[in-house]
Image 1 (cartoon, helix red, strand yellow):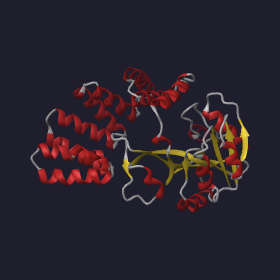
Image 2 (cartoon, rainbow, N blue to C red):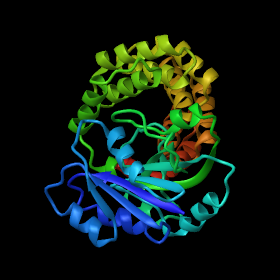
Image 3 (cartoon, rainbow, N blue to C red):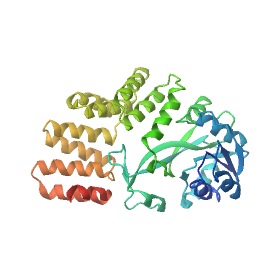
Image 4 (spheres, one colour):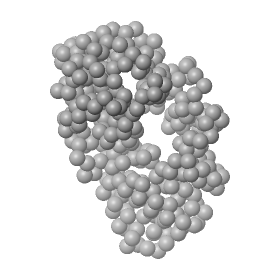
Length: 348
């Protein structure tokens, strides 16, 4: 029923776990190699993959579409070479593809990271997945990686590719699931790696608000704030109703010391798309302006939206300390340390 499609180059350390994780689920494994000089192809072949060569053209979408074109099963599961699916979720995926009602399914890509302040960071503490033990937490992202094998469903985008636009174009239906894809690449990605993705996008500008948002947010992640603002403003001009763009602009403004000016931008972000990170940032503004009671409410709302984000608990603990509530502050700090042990170092 399912073809596993993977692309990669020089991924000998990760291609084995990737294929092995999905092998019990799929009837066919397609691996498209974009120029490996290590043992990646041999490992894929040894695990039963049909291996094809693809001349790299700086376009991840094209390489994935090459893999999709080789698939013969009714459904496609698309994984990156540094991703896995947990054994416990294979039966859930089998159940999904037994239905013909939907053309694709959102899976939750877990980008494992130990970096504090990551948007939507969620603690791995008490997590049921063995895979989550590699990091203190992860940033979740909904992605359509399971979809019908239809020639009209193809990846679009050179770096941050997606099949969603093509499914929408044919009037297809997509359903959300809570099934995670475990992505380990974020643990080793460098600023140079991010810069490479930005460069690919800049070579293929298509006048799309989401592409401009992606470029802006990635520039932000490597500290190039002027470039980030340039692309985020373009995104906003193309689509003034995308909340994440406002959030990124506000966060950059705060980093530049324009704290009060960021307030209305954050409020608009929350109006369009309420997110924990926006409430947390608004709490920081309230602290800066000495509105501690308002700050408490902001951080509490952030915690309501994501109780396992250690950053929100830490921020709330600091405000409670300012308000002369040492007992409550200690409790919140304890929760921060519980969800991210790195916070213990701030009190040592």
